[in-house]
Image (cartoon, rainbow, N blue to C red; front, side):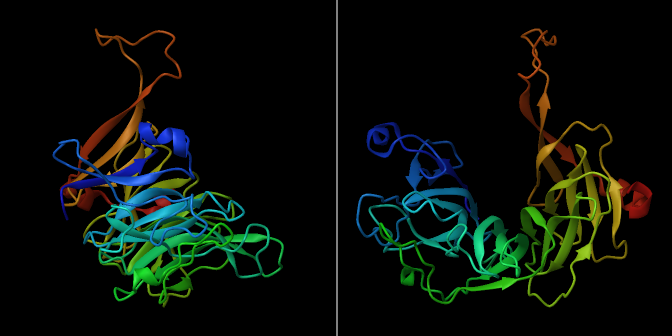
Length: 349
C-alpha cells in the first residue's frame, strides 16, 4: 500500500538502563520508509511502570508485525511481561488520535487467553502463528492451544477472529498489575477445526475466502489443508500426502495456486481449478530452502538457502562447517512450463 516496512525492535540504547535488554516480553514494532532515509517511527507504546497500564499501550513484546494489504491495521503476536502466567496471544493495532505518548498506533489484544494450566475444556490457553485473511483486516486466523473435552489434554486447532471495521479499538482494556489486557467489544472467535493437530503459520488467500494451513497426518507428517474462512466447510480439504513435512505455505495472488517447501524443494499445487489437487515440482536439489515468499504480481518467488562460506577469491573456506550464511535467492516462475507439466499428487507422494 505504501513504501513502508515494519519490524521488531528491542529497546533503544538509551532505554536499556530503564527497560533492560531485548526479549520476547521486551520489544516493540517500528516503522521505516522504504527509501532508506533512516527515519524510525515507533508504532506501539510499552508501559510497565503504572498500576493501571496506559490506555492503548502494552506491557510486554509485540512480534511478527503484519500489515493488512489495505494498510489499515497491523496484526502481531504478543507476550505479556507483567502477568507471565498467561501464554502468548495475538493482537492488532490501528492508527488513532488516542494512541499514547507520541506513538502512531493504539494497541489491543484480540484474545485474552485462559491462565496457563488453569483452563477449562474449550478454553484457549495460547494463540499464535496468526495472519490476516482478508485485505481489510476483518478476519485474523490463528492456531489456538485449546483444552480438550477430557479436561487434561490439549488440541491445537485453527481459529478465526472476526474483527469488523466498526469495532472501536478504544473500548479495549489495557490491563493493570493484576489484570490481563482485554480485547475491544465486538470481536468474535470461531473454531474451524477440531482435533486436527494444526501447526505452522496459517495463510489466507488473496480474496479472503480460503485458509491454507498444515496439520499432522496419522504418520505425524505435516500435510497441507485448505478450508473456507467463513466456517461453512465441515471438513478441510487435504491437499498433500507427502512422506516429508510441508512448510512455508504461500498463496499465489490469483487464489488458485499454493507454493510450499518439502525436503528443501519448492512445489506448486493447483487449488479449486481444472487441475484440482495436482502438484508440480519446481526444484529437485534438496537445498533446504526456507522463508518462501511470493511477489505481489505472482511472477517471482524469493527464499533463503544456507550457503557455504567462501573467501575473497570465491574459494570454499576449509573448516567452515556451521558458519554458512543464509543468502537470498529469487526464482522467475515460468507458467508455460508449469501449465504443461502438472503431475498427479499420487505420483510424487
